[in-house]
Image (tube, rainbow, N blue to C red):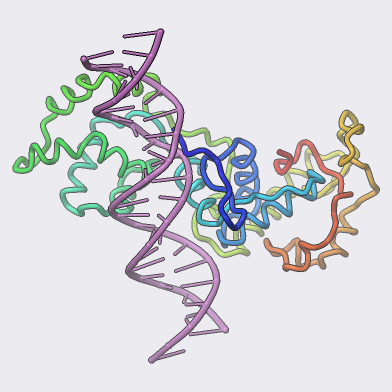
Length: 268
DNA sequence: AATGAATCCAACCGCACTACA
DNA sequence: ATGTAGTGCGGTTGGATTCAT
């Protein structure tokens, strides 16, 4: 039910997102937040390349990344059926605010403006029109309509009722909202480094390039080299790891020899 | 079984707004 | 005051799915 993927004249990918793209976007936003959507796809691509040793990028425009994240990937999104309470709330708020979907969405935690808009057009609009003079919409009408369209009812029943999106991404709150670059990243380095240190035998940060991935040793791109954190710092300067984004000239360098870590979320 | 119509929703597009140089 | 970049919002579209004939 999504548009077929394609590339526009500028080489930007459009259409449906693949699972791999989703993972890349999630991995990047988990790490750095999204202080700059426009640069995100390029940065997500280059940073992940360090681990993948592949010349792949997230070939999406920032706008597309933002939309995908906001409407589909971000945590705590509700999927599935709307409760009667939510439906009533949408009706009431729409009566009050009109097509201010973002405003309406603020009052429905876990629902996106896009989702509410779609739901309005496909389910609720007709009842609003029918009950224009009533203060509340007719529940019987709505129920009748739901059962009337077997297409709708079938599809709705297949979906879990008001399922809360898996929050396993454990994305920092500061990363989800509009935050400063520093806050999102520094919050990671302080907390997550500690976690990684606990888990990592080498007692390094998430940038630890240990010699894992023996099973991939046959792959050409998995050439193992004695890479360490210090080397990486030298390449970019220390500011690279304290700031979420890289200078443009960093993109022209060949880091294909960098090891990757399978357990790192960037490994997708 | 085949086919056209209806439905739904992820994704795209264009515009407006804000921040900043 | 002006121009530009980045972001958010609302309208629209594409196409998969399901239903009706």
